[in-house]
Image 1 (tube, rainbow, N blue to C red):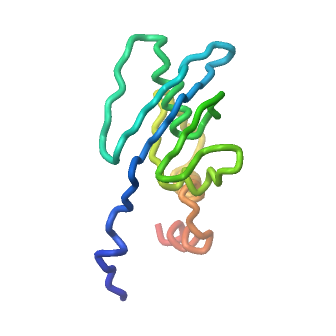
Image 2 (image 1 turned 135 degrees about the vertical axis):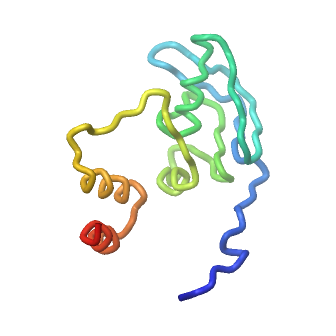
Image 3 (image 1 turned 180 degrees about the vertical axis):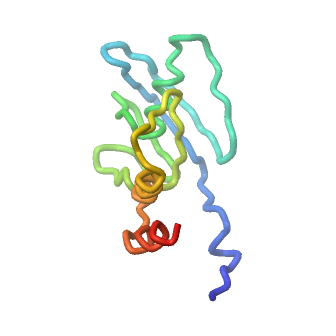
Length: 133
């Protein structure tokens, strides 16, 4: 068994976890976010506004679910543009949508395997864990 060092568990620091300049995001044909400048550090933040203000659309863009229509978006020190490795960026994000789905016909085993796949766990590790369960 190996000991994990403090350096391995220390959180990664970024000048800004979320940084936007002139961000524009569309919801269908409607421009829901128009020219947003934002700089957020790590931590917990709240987003408040009336219905239709663009909160969900902004969150979807920050989670890389939809592409911005314009401006600049940087997440965890990585510019999110056409050349970005979204898989690498998404590994550092946590996102739970307002309406999320699950698969009611999944068995417990299928659901565990699906979650392991989402977390990119090696198949050999998943197969061994599922067999022992």
